[in-house]
Figure 1 (cartoon, rainbow, N blue to C red):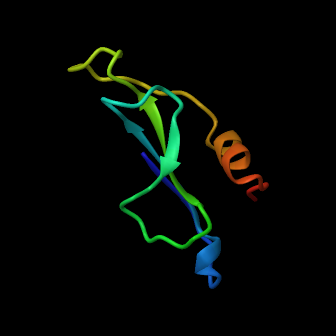
Figure 2 (figure 1 turned 30 degrees about the vertical axis):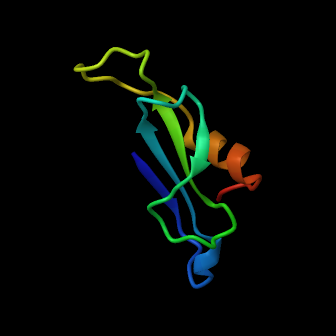
Figure 3 (figure 1 turned 60 degrees about the vertical axis):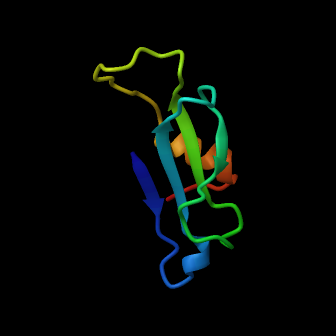
Length: 79
């Protein structure tokens, strides 16, 4: 799942979180998004929601609070 908070005309204020499954990183690991434009002050990140220890080949549901992730990772209130 990809979440984008637009920076509007100040595009460098755009924040993104890409929630992914990873075969090599543990649940909750955060890292810069290598597939997005660089130079946006670390505001383009990926978070592992699944890891290699999770069951594969099945559908999964995720539950969480995107607002809390945005506030925790970027240190800003999102309105």
